[in-house]
Length: 83
Image (spheres, rainbow, N blue to C red):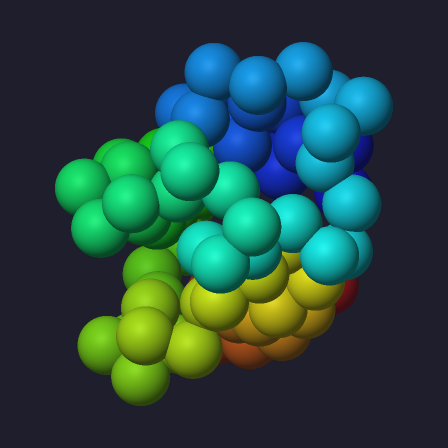
């Protein structure tokens, strides 16, 4: 999802070429608790989805962000009758 890379790049103020599945809280100084909440909010707003608290806590790297976002997006579109 290119839109996720756009959001991560903007929130963490990093270039897109730094963003891979391995990008995580542990290896990215910019990924602090405050920016984590900004990231979740931005993804929810941009994609018109809502994460559960468990999903918010589970996002520990870009790969998990991508996978959880895809899963939530599918469930959201099914509930709304889209797709």
